[in-house]
Length: 385
Image (cartoon, one colour):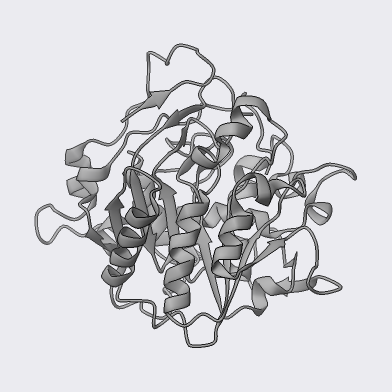
């Protein structure tokens, strides 16, 4: 696997301890029969929704490039391993695909040139997923993100992908194609937000697909499907000061962020559930979510894809594939600056972050694991999401 440090700095001598192959086997339930690890323990715990009596299924695949044929084959195989898309997509459905184009072009230069291969969702993954959705019966596709500049989609290669799929590109910072936004309730026992302001399409579509990048995050440990929902909120309603171009209000102050942001992520998942997740980990970055996280940020090529129908379980397996324990405690690696938002989601009955409760199919977890360098303790840069 190739690794390039964009800052030409030395790698830290002391990479925090990550889980070993033995740990993986243990966490995956390949230990003495009869060993039972307790599930979520919290006063907020609720029963898992729908299929709570059977394990969530998550699939892993290896892919060493963004070649269209390779991606088409691997994505189709992964969906087959999940039991197909018939339970998610019905003929004539309108489907949203949420991608991650965090930061926009503000960091220019070398970063803007390599963005689609590092910290942004690669458009060819979206093409492969979109084709499968259409074949499953989707009539309309909407590729959406709260973009930072008007030319972000074009620069990142999404205009040609949208044309090929017959999809519409949506900037979630605008109400288009409607005249106004909607207020979407979270439901009872919300943490931070009782409701969110969304583009109407976000909750109007029949199915919602998340295609994030496989990355660490300075403020919440990892940024995968759950964290990808942060981009649903129009910036003008979630910035802490007028004129700011990020969702600083969701993060809160530096003192608030460690507990506030993970809870906002859970509120968002309840307001807009995710029906299908495909995580792009072919080429990405470690040590942070974007080039604003200096000193630890560098490019890596894990060469993996992760997919599942339950976003919490999918994020948990992806976190393990990064060499981390998805059930880690608050302020433990990789959640070094925050609560574990996967555990919070589990406590709210939204899925499980316990590997022994997940059926992993496709490639073996221990065969695809790539040990990511985590973010560092606070003192780094607050996210620009």
